[in-house]
Length: 317
Image (cartoon, rainbow, N blue to C red; front, top):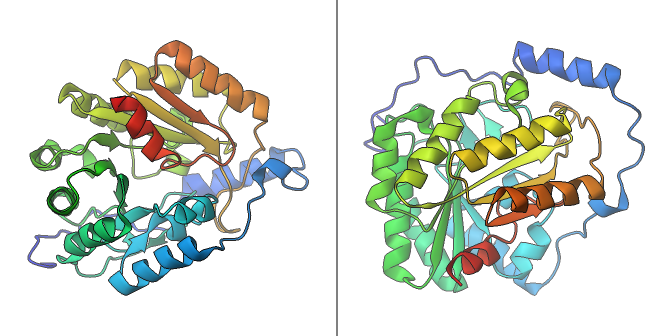
């Protein structure tokens, strides 16, 4: 038992780099053209400013994690200086070994049952109009952590009822009982990232399934939630595969999409295959809007939560 929640560690793959990832990494390193220096459009300022320091101090005081820090998000300075952040609940250790992600992998610590209260109080203190809640994967929990998501949403609604709530969830192994737990305290926007094209799943998301993620989005859309998903480019995909993925998302009821450049967190992660041009990002945005997405954020530094508050306002305006 962890925090009075049943757990099961059987069958959980906690490997840092699997064989698919190893071979894929070698293939890219051998075949890609010399990248050269990082383009100017991928350069970001170091985090500074009073608002940035205020948000950082609040996170430390409340003993909370943010995906901004754990995933080394390039937009952290911009978002924190606007007094916004994406809270990462369920600890800082993930039970999956995605080849692109900088979040720590291993056996998680005990479940923190007081975390929802601290997140809700931080949202209240920051006076947020829109908040994003994400998490590590907790495949050892019978509900995948859905109960903590629900309790967090409930407490935010009680303390800051005017704040719209977006959750960026794992796939919960496709278990509908976890989806039903989320729907007891539903968010305003349900986000689940595909991350990459189907062909690359074995290397990029070895414990996930492309079809399962699409079915998750469809399931929540049928419950009349606003839905969202995001991907990285420059990790080995082909342009036609991205367009096919976009069509699949639209067919499964996705409303909002984000597309950004993959950046290798460390030398142990999958390498960058190429730096996608600004024109290609523009093309994806135009094609997405033509397909019928309500909003498409497509640019090198775009991440899943980038301009999330704007998307929420636009969906209701």
